[in-house]
Image (cartoon, rainbow, N blue to C red; front, side, top):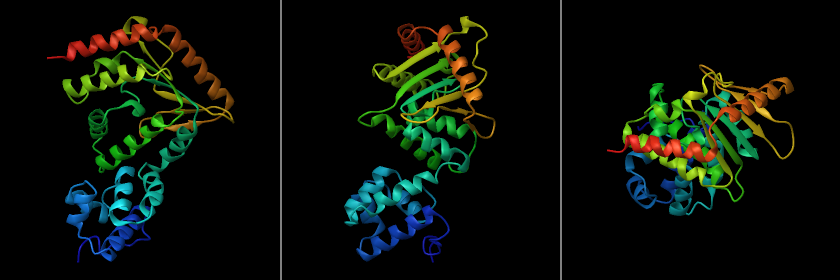
Amino acid sequence: MSAADELDPTASVLAFFASELRRVRREAGVSQTDLARTAYVTPSLLSKIEAASRVPSQDLAEELDRSLGADGHFTRLWPLVIKHAYPPWFRPYVELERNATVIRTFQVQFVHGLLQTEDYARAVLSAGRPDAVEDLLTARLERQRLLDQDLPPRLWLVMDETVLRRVIGGPSVMHAQLAKLVRAAANPRNVIQVVPYSAGAHAGFGPFTLLSFAEGADVVHEDGFSRGQLLADPEDVQAAVRSYDLLRAVALSPDASIEMIIAAMKELSP
């Protein structure tokens, strides 16, 4: 008996998705190999998804519906699956981020997750030696879909120069990541600024993100050692806003920041 046959569909949302996939596929008389081919994934990945050991992407959920004629069944299940792919402490932030109209973030070590390339994100996530890098990667890349909406949130990214200088994943991966930042900066809804080393001490003692909404008060997400925390107390929010204003004041202008990013890219070129 396979691991997929031993699944308890009530154990988790992912297990339910896996058991439903196996049920619908078998009822349709389709083998894993044939479904993998029509859904444009490897048989190995499909087997892991049916065993509830991998999280499916939204694109794959849509392909499963198309291939199996499932009338949107897996696409409707997918939001529940991806929600539970995030660590429990991070899920409230993801929900708030999805509804934000303005995202202001300061980063001291890595590019913000919303602008990470797949290879860069994999390198960042792998550094912590987690048990499920690929699932965490899928979840992170799916978060980026909110920037592809018809009216995405306005994004203001301030980062320490260290983010540009720390080579993550090797020169080619880092070069591609910096190139993505340059492309993102060309979008009028995005602003990217770099706090140069020459600024000396500044108000950003650690990474944090301010989320603003069409209705309701701002909130702050503050990164920590093992997990972040959401802060909604007005005094905490105002302190974060003040720190962010001070960071923008000492940062390079958007144009000068892009020039620095391009210069860093050239240093990585062969």
